[in-house]
Length: 317
Ligand code: AKB
Image (cartoon, rainbow, N blue to C red; front, top):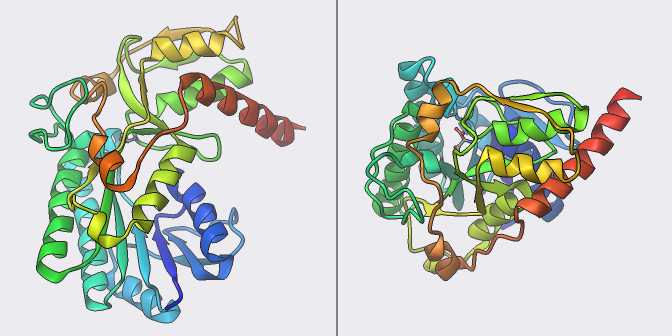
């Protein structure tokens, strides 16, 4: 059967780039991008879907004979704290809708993104193992930890092939993050290229796991392509790229922009970051499906700056 992909939350940081990667892989006509609002950044098929509306998801699944769903819509760590119960409602309701429609319609594969936000103070700070005790401190982290268990439940109870990655902070030039605690690591490059001072909401020594967009997209597609019997973890796989602090990224940026100015004004997001791991152990992803990151901080900095310079040149001329 031909693969027909539905992406829910296609306008987000990861969604924009993943949609294009999946279009390249499966053909533009076989990828249905969807989000709450229309988007003119795509060539190809786009449908408005509010993922809290289960009937609408089902309608689109029927309309295009969908075989795979990537459910990317969620409210992230920092934004989620503004309205904890509302965030729980949205993150869980949308996931249940996707799981239920997938079960009912016999969807082949479902992708559900989790996050390093599932870890809390009880997990080791360095090289955090995948099976560490989970006591997340944000509602986003709680919803992802619960979601991982629901993914596993649907696999065990109904045989639904749900796969998941715990993403670190994702860094890319193609799209902007929104509402996360790791967002600073994208914003900082924009400010450097625009010649503006950067105000950092984390302390300079706060080390967090991060991943370059190309690695994050490759990890997602590699996981989704892995033969079913090789997927041993049905909650979510730890996936690491690199780890760095604001201070380290500033040092790297200053090699290219020596006058780049930064000030530190830690806010509530520091509290969130201080409970997350500094680095994570992704050896099970390597063992089960061959995961290996390609980009270090130097590579990321060079690629980010090169592409953002291009972007701002074309946007401001
Ligand atoms: C966030 O900061 O909330 C996200 C994440 C790590 O899941 N980028």
